[in-house]
Structure formats: structure tokens, C-alpha cells
Length: 175
Image 1 (cartoon, one colour):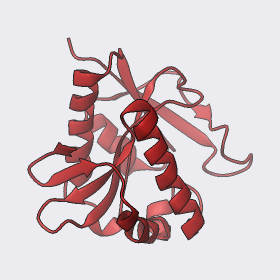
Image 2: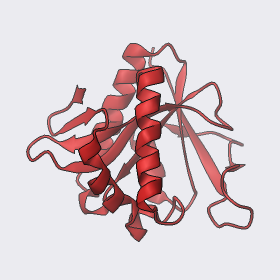
Image 3: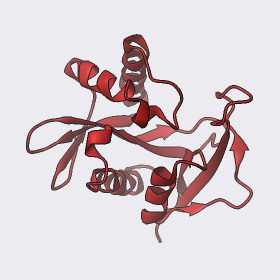
Image 4: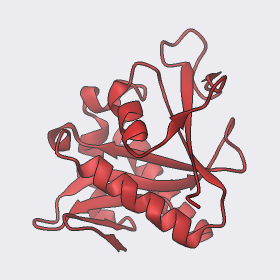
């Protein structure tokens, strides 16, 4: 577990499945991530996170508010997929009811601290679509910089989708 003043980042539990599914069926949350997810899809995502935690010792962890134990969403780290293979990706997804309160910034900052303390990596990367100003704004607040000539067409997004084009941000390990 990773704790901050307001949050706990922790491995996933079975009782997270229903509240996480509620987050993933919110059209506003999924606006830049693809379509809303079925229960089977959100459950499969949790299963992938559990597998990543078991295999690597990290994942996109469940984010819980300390004072009432509410599941806010996720934030954490994963081994990167194309085009950021051989890198660590930081990512987050919070329910829209929790936006604008600094939770994502708080969670992402502590994830970066965790990465620098426990992983021997030169940098951490993040991706999003250009229209997702909230996400890349958070990347910039974390000190991440957009990679010049790093824009790419996401291989998992169908051709013709307005979500095909992605932008890449990266932050170097502090000296």
C-alpha cells in the first residue's frame, strides 16, 4: 500500500468490482478512452491489474479515499506497451464525481515517488489523446514534458477513430 494524506493506493479486491464498473460505464469518464465498458470488460481490467501486481510488483492500483474508503478509481504504473515498450507507463482513471479535487495529482505524484524509489528506470512515460486536456494538464503539473515528434497512432485503437492519435509525455528520473 501507498498512503498519502487523503488516499490509499492498494492492490485490487473483489469488492472493488462493482464500484469500478460504475466508473467505467460513465460516458464522461470514458470519453477519451473508448466506449463505456461492460461488467465483463471492467472485471477483466481488474484481473489484468492483479496479474501485473503478482508478476511485476506494481500495477494501476485501486485508489481509495482514506476517510470513507470510497473507491475513486485507479492510479499507478505498468510496463509500457507499444510505442513505449521497455518503459514504465503511469496512468490514472478516476470517477467523474472525484474530478477537480486534486486526487489524481496527489496519487500520480506518489506513484512517481514510488517508481524512483523502487524501480531502476531512467524515465516514466504517459500517453493520452490530444483532446484530453485534463490528462495532459496533469502530466505537465507532474513535471512531465511532451515528447517532441512523439505523437503516434495507437495500435489498439481502430483506424478512423477520433481517439487513434495519441501524444506522449515523459519525465526523467530526478538527479
